[in-house]
Length: 119
Image 1 (tube, rainbow, N blue to C red):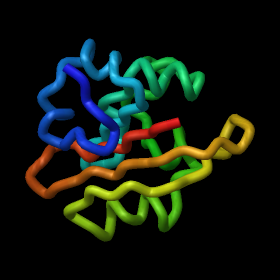
Image 2: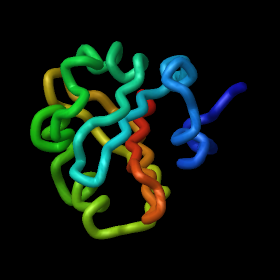
Image 3: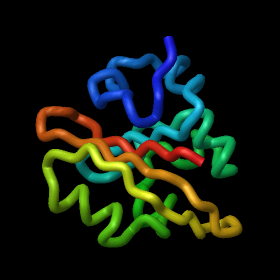
């Protein structure tokens, strides 16, 4: 079953087993209400060069992706209960500046918020 970056919905991500999340061609990061990393798929681990075990449980915006701790990404999750937004972005932490598209997904009744990263 193919899931496109701009078509997959939050419900599908929440129901997807880790093995299927790992097969997606884009990064998937799932955050709990405290913004701690709960889901970190193999695609993102490989592209970011960070082992899944080293980021699970860490505060995403403070310890893993400080370059997203700003008004364009982190603040959106604070200010908007409902999110489904694609944001052009440039990753800069621990790498040469890399253009990506981020997809921010959140809804008040979902236990996790997601950041999808398409390189």
